[in-house]
Amino acid sequence: MMNDAELERWFETHATALVLYARQWLDRSGAEDAVQEAFVRLLLQPTPPRQVKAWLYRAVRNEAITQWRSSRSRERRERQAALPETLFEYDATTGGDVEALTTAIAKLPPAQREILVLRVWGELTLAEVSELIEMPVSTVFQNYRTAIGTMRKRMEEPCQKKTH
Amino acid sequence: MPEEDALNTEERETVEAIARFKPAAVRIDPFRIRLEAQRRRAKRQVWLWRGVAAALATGLILSWIWRPGSAVREHVVYVRSPAPAITRDTASPTFVTTRLEPRAPVPVGDDYLAVRDRVLALGIDALSPHGHAVRHYNPLPIPDASPLHDPDALRGGSL
Image (cartoon, rainbow over all chains, first blue to last red; front, side, top):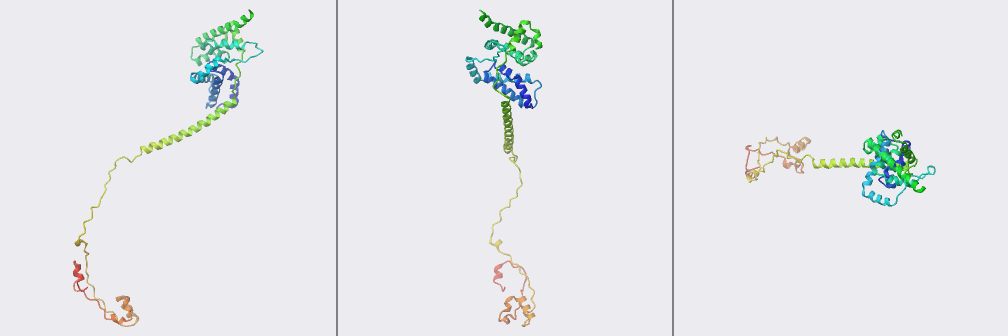
């Protein structure tokens, strides 16, 4: 069984990225519920999994998809569509456009968006992503490159408009 | 990110640029997670004991339903035949008369031994104030000791 120190370490390291990952299917509170559920299940495991990070992402994915399929969650998702929330924290040092990034990610196709989040913020390897979403590594890599290209174009658009 | 080597320079710059954005903070904390885990552990134990109780109850009910004893058993039963009707002949008692040896003469006298022998022979009545009335008692001899089957004959006899 996992002790408190280990739990806090895993939580501090991965909780925000896990919520971001779950936000693809759920609103903020739903995503947090899914992440909490995953951590609770991790604590209830008699022996901790060998690859805790991969296990956590899989647990969050399963929980988020289950919630997303439920009618209650669907209604909540529809309400949430009218009230977009930012997915990232504003940081003055980066000086980036948080809303533009959120919009750009939201417009990506679901598979590309999932791969990009898992790879960039989840820091999973392409092999781990491939195993998690049950897709060949080569296909994962192609989707990843396409998503990066799309993001680059969309992130540059506001800047170009501002310069004109 | 070793796999970033497969990306070109522009793609790598894009990844580095978007990776600088940090995901929004979460409103959950490890304390709530531990609390929820403890609550579920307790709930699991309750359900475990409920399951044990339900299994025992089910076993008890099934054993009661399928209990042995409903099969047909054969027994040999002996029943007494009804007693024959009582008739006058069978109801009549059977008298058996035996010959009594004539007793020795009851001693006469007022001394202790004589009184004792009279009491032993005749009973307490021998001590009546007129004790001399039974002085010459002697049982009558029975002429014949053969069994008699007719009580009326006995009643009408000298006995």
